[in-house]
Image (cartoon, rainbow, N blue to C red; front, side):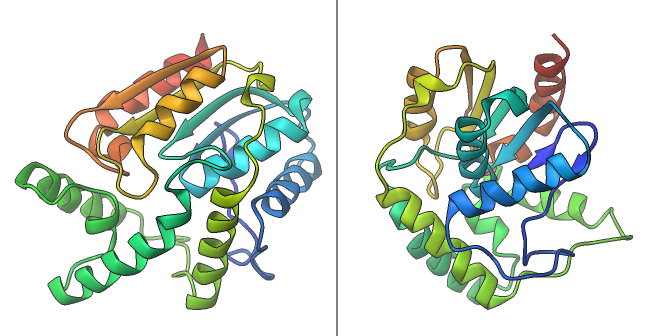
Length: 224
């Protein structure tokens, strides 16, 4: 999850942030709220991806006064069908990537056809462009805790997304194997003031494959 324009937020126990990874999405959202308020912000725009999108939903539902606009990408709602299978898909793709000797993100975020493979390689190369202040690799313990939190989110009682009154931009690829694309469509139906963009021939990392289209669309959404 990120604070649009002003900065980015790395969850507790991940990247350069110390502490233990919370084992629920709601606790992660509480951390996000504490962090945002500690920085002195009264209102923020929130961009989120995957797990971050789950945190963002919990944040805006608990603290609606804090969020002006919301961007949810590659994510799904509490109780969403298939979210409880994210851990299995993640471990499976990590094994496949190890055998293929490539970055697991190539399997997790992209289709395995030629278009997807090219997009994956381009994405990995873009990640290498940043050389300073790079996040430390996630630990096995932290990853397992995050995946357990996601599974718990998938098994939890659905929340009332109609309570989200903020303008919301939802985006995903049309073949998200991690967080099913149908859940993006479900959120769009349930969040009244929302717009949905589904990128063709792409997976969980659709916004990365279509970065030249998504980035200006997101900026325009926040600026309008």
